[in-house]
Image: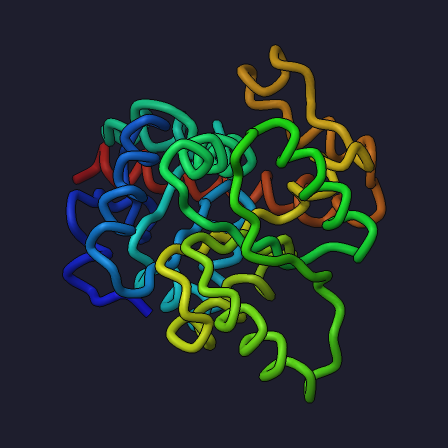
Length: 255
């Protein structure tokens, strides 16, 4: 886990959670700084659903507070922060940050490990990214399915690769807990969870059109693709997030 001094540098607070109000380019530059500084650093992306989850899960909130870099993944988070008088310049979506980092990695010679999703999906994602970013150094990849007693071996496999960057395609909160528990033993300098990004890269699922992303409606596109899995996260979670924002705004007005 990153030290607190690093994780709180230049951060603002939104809904009681630290957030780094960086643009995409500044976020990529910050990752470059962390790679030069060394150590072991975890990134987390905040969307409305995750902020709601943090209210219900103190241990997950503690993990997020210890991360070196915390981005506003959801457009709703950007809008809510601005409504509360906090300047967050733009959304830094996890999948877009991953692509920007892969482009920089190909330029700088950083090595990359892909961990998560099904075996055929992660293999396809690696193939796509190698064609998309010529010169990309792949330290290794493997799927995200293993028995509890195999986890130590998975961590050792990543460490043996000596990767600079690690992308973990697992759902919340599994990816956050996995990285927090094993960050030092994984040996990578920078690790980030990327949720279902490998599925998107591999063409298994699709992203919302650009206009839906800009309008903060990407959640509706995902709900349409996976209604059973996403119903509670989006319809119930988004309602709670709106209520939280209203309460924070009224509290600030009274204050």
